[in-house]
Amino acid sequence: MSRWFQYMVGVIHIDWKPTTGKQASLSNSELALNVKLGYRDERTNWTVMAQSTEKRSLDCVKEKDYYECDIIPLYEIGSVHHDFYLLNLMYNTTKVRDLQIDSIYLHVILQTGGFTRVWLSLKTVTFPLIIGLVIFFWNRIRKLSRSANLLEKIIFGMGLTLAFLDCPIEWLTLGMKIPFMLLLNDIRQGIFYCALLSFWIVFCGEHMMDKVIRNRVSVYWKELTAVGIGSLCLFIFEICERGVQLTNPFFTIWADNIGKRVAVKEGNWKWGTGSWHASEDDDSENLDLDETQPLEYTSAFFTGVFCMWNIYAGSLLFLYAPSKKNPNLPEDEQSDERGEEIEFSQINSEAVALAPRSRENDGQNSFLSTLQKSAMD
Image 1 (cartoon, helix red, strand yellow):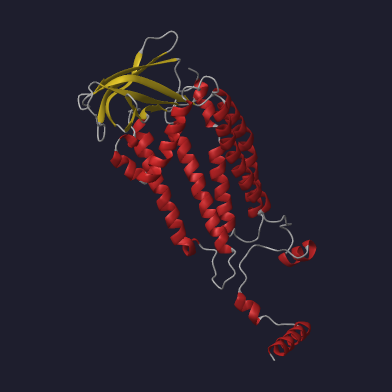
Image 2: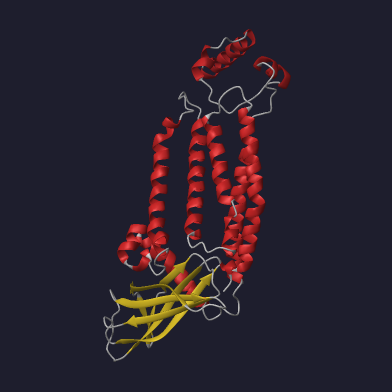
């Protein structure tokens, strides 16, 4: 094992063989597992990392002379800090009648070292750039004679959350054992997406052409409350899943039907996991022959999304930064020196209606009124 792998996920695939000629049934059946996971380094002895007795539900389909079951999640650890890992597995099939286990396959899923190097390199490059743009944006805000409006504040907050997401703290896992790194990364990503959704809500609201005066958080309390509740639900689910795995890596919320329904809708979950399981079954025999091809597409997707959000947020920080002014000059002289300044702010329609109009505008309006009257006649 290598510390560049970052995490390790283990799943098992079981094939059942009938012991009699009777038609066996595996519906609503459970498999009791007594599992133990240990580790050691080159110059140390084996140490028990975790042990537990778990139950996994079975979902099997008959294929000719045997029953093929869906892949069963077994364990997940968020840090591959040691050189060697050993899994001890004991199973109890007393509740499964007229069937016996024909074969058990253990599939180990790791994050490849090459992807980890590329991922950390991207974070190392983008982190100082985003920090610089955040500082640049806030310095422009501070030089204004007015206070920052709501849109500028939320852009600044989104920049801070992106900088928190880009911080390459994964470098610490190469020298330290940090089992909660997966949980921390998911929390950082959730905070950024929460800030991004809040920005889109405020951005759309501030540019609506109506008579409502916004620029206050209280105006968007319904939309922001919905975002907060959704983020809180995802956080609770994350704590229930990977938070418990810090002490028991064999725990999974997908082990029973109740956990599946609590997490997401059962139909969507079965569709997603079923397609993933089907692809795993079809490619299991050719895994050694063409191992890197599907991983390249996945790596390109993750790195592409990461770069896209950094470019998007960085562009907002740069383009929405207020124009540079001389703080020593009065506001009217700055306007004369810089020319006409356009800001993204609400236009009060009542003030526009009450504003004095020139004779030229009156003439144009009279001419338009005459044309409209002629067209109606």
